[in-house]
Length: 255
Ligand SMILES: [Fe+2]
Image (cartoon, rainbow, N blue to C red; front, side, top):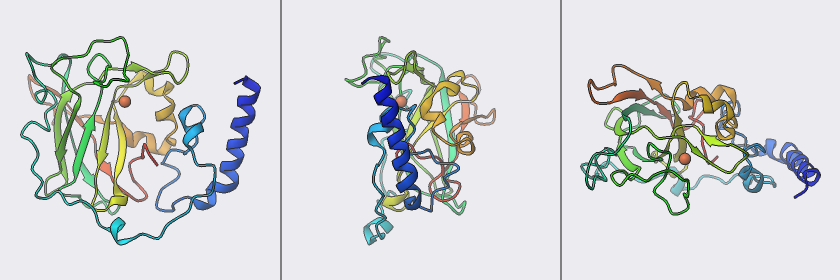
């Protein structure tokens, strides 16, 4: 598409957004934290951002309830990505442990919340057929796992620090190191999909997915190095707390 047409399209989409969408935002989101649905520098939002007014549906019983995982049995290695796919040795890379608390909008801990995680390996490669990045797969690392919060809302998992990888969003585009999170709260509507980043990553400044989040919300996406979480002679520790809904909700990837 010629640059002039692209510019007109972007202006048109911005007008649509300003004219129609603002009145229909879900008021339970803090729009100073959550990312805009349309962020042209993140090019796929141009195609997927709504261009018509949102229809706010009254919550049904199904949305006020949700999956209950209290008695759900996880596999013994589900929470340990450094061990759950071993074939012939240890996965390569820097071992880390990630720990945190899941809270609801009132700051109360969310017990028995299922957390699913997925990520690239240390070389920046996913085990997925569409990932053709010229970086090695690790035969001993799958890059996916899951864990559950305990009665106090705490979770913990082990993994390998993910590498950066290129993506086609713009010339020389690289994603910062990140781990994808999916959480099921106590209602279907409290499901959260987000990404955790690492402190001091120089790529954050150039990443339109991270930059699409409002400045106030970006710090909520960056884990904190924590020496108390770090395990001596084994793995560096990072703390990442997550708020499922409300004014201080962790920014959604899929809002
Ligand atoms: Fe990713």
